[in-house]
Length: 194
Image (cartoon, rainbow, N blue to C red; front, side, top):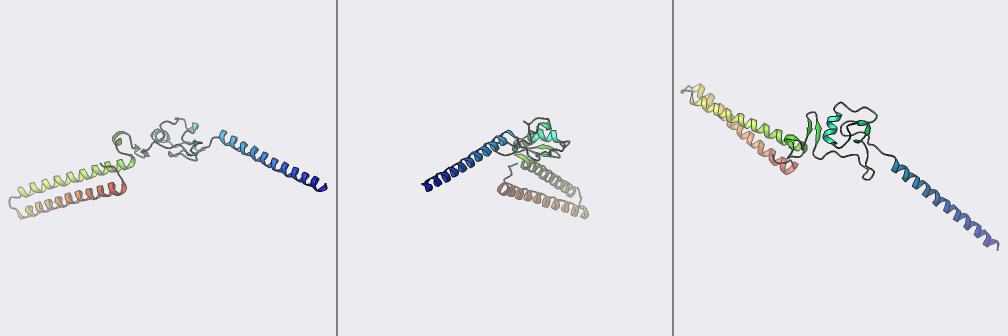
């Protein structure tokens, strides 16, 4: 009989102890869940250089309009810093856009059909290669003109030949470098065709 009463007391103590542990576990678990749902979280800095509690940089509004066009113009709203509770990530910028010292680059204006910085690089290199090729062709025409107007003067003939050979070498070098650049950029780096 004493054994049964001892076992009942131990059983009741263990049951009470387990019940209290489960009760406090769920009490603190639900408290943490409620606390985490009601408290908004913010990233340290956005991609425009706005870091709390410092004031935003001078170009923050232009950068915000480029990267976060749907965010509020007021930096105190912290729209560019607010972490999404479902994805646990800060706001993502518009894909393909980059804000630089030149302004907003990618998916706007001249670079609308190409994506981001790669499109800008491709455009700039196309302009450079076109200019170098054009100058080389004009230099070739100048060499031909010098050769034709040399009137059998040996110095002018040699100068015209040097100009023509230099312009042909420059034109071959430009075309070869353009070919190598396009081969590397499209096959290995995945830049868009320009």
